[in-house]
Image 1 (spheres, rainbow, N blue to C red):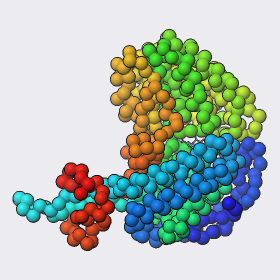
Image 2: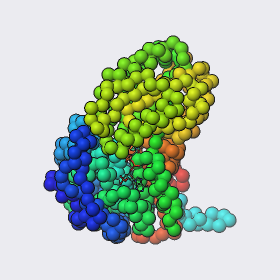
Image 3: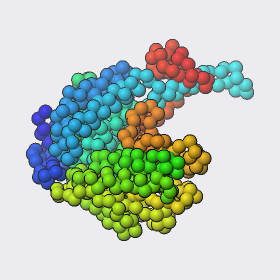
Image 4: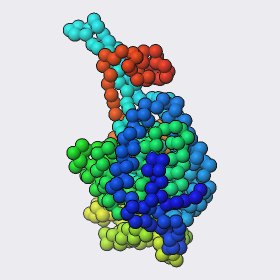
Length: 525
Ligand code: NAP
């Protein structure tokens, strides 16, 4: 695919209006062609106008047409998997084989959301039939379905440049909900973004949809993101990135004359609790597994296990040694961007300043933007005194916490802010302690894992990638998994409607064959 570096606004290619940039290969620290255009508020306005024009017809597409559109995108991703992976590898320093698997995951997500659309349950069709003889007053016929909320601005993530970027889960779920998408491409991988943007643009054309269903913009600094969040025709936002960036955009959206939902996925340390019998039985194995997962993607993963807590006793030293061995042997690897590497180094300094002792360091860096792996240790008392130790260090570092006793373990569990996940390693004899921890963790996390690690995240109907603040800005929703579509839906009630005027999902003869809730009972009628 020939890259032009242009912005994609509907079916149009738009040249730079606000400067341009080149992609950086973080492994070589060299930039390379072509120039990638920056746009500004005018381009945001054009994309938003088009998305608004597209909304009514796209939101009204039949389930079959919408599902087929999502499958077209999946086909395009499959066809370009290799070229996508090669470009993404140059722009991120991540291995091409891993990125090809990411492209396959991305295509699978679009197919999974096509399945969600075909089944139609996301409409949540609900019918309360008329009760003309009800006393003391009759009930009119009430029917409810969910529809898309309107054009969505999506901030592509930096750390999964394919599966959570332009053609990632946010885009797939917003399109599944019937919402046009305006994508703010991350500047960390502009060529990868363009390839994915073109695949979606082509699918819009081939499906015969309104061109405004998809646009892809790029900008310099915060101005373009701010213009997107401010635009009156944008009706929702998703974001993956830093807590500072996510909360700035969240607050901005709440200050609009018409506040809109902003779904941010920001920060999590994914605490791992190794309970005493599990520690004694398989401490070394758990330590090795933890260290392996903390180093995946150079530690640049939202589900990286970053803090391991265990009560000092049998198995602790074996676990500690296994962690040290793996971290010690790890070579420094290229991080995604200079900014992320610099933030990582600041995070390491913060750990030192907060009293964490370095117990292992990986092989020293050779490249400018390499991240060296680190393992720190503190005792439970220090952790309780120093909230900074509970903050995310985005990169290949983790903290081991030597806890005095089970009461201290439970007390520390209460210190954590909201998390995407927490993990318990346990044996049968640990169940009573696990039962004490469970309600504490349920209040603080979106997913609790037993005897495994949270990473990688399954993408399925029951999977949840969300959690209380600051993991996300809205704990009621997930950004990964099939229920991610619910972020972009709102209910509409149709009262006293003649059948001919009802949406298909709510008609009397149920032409779509949907499962519907009628008088509170599910039925396919
Ligand atoms: P970021 O700095 O938060 O940027 C994410 C996106 O939002 C970028 O497109 C950025 O545009 C835009 N943006 C950020 N702040 C903005 C603001 N105030 N107004 C308008 N737009 C704004 O995240 P990042 O560059 O991907 O990574 C930086 C740090 O975020 C990492 O070091 C890590 O701590 C954290 N992070 C966490 C996760 C996670 O899953 N937990 C994932 C990725 C990153 P520009 O690039 O133009 O600034």
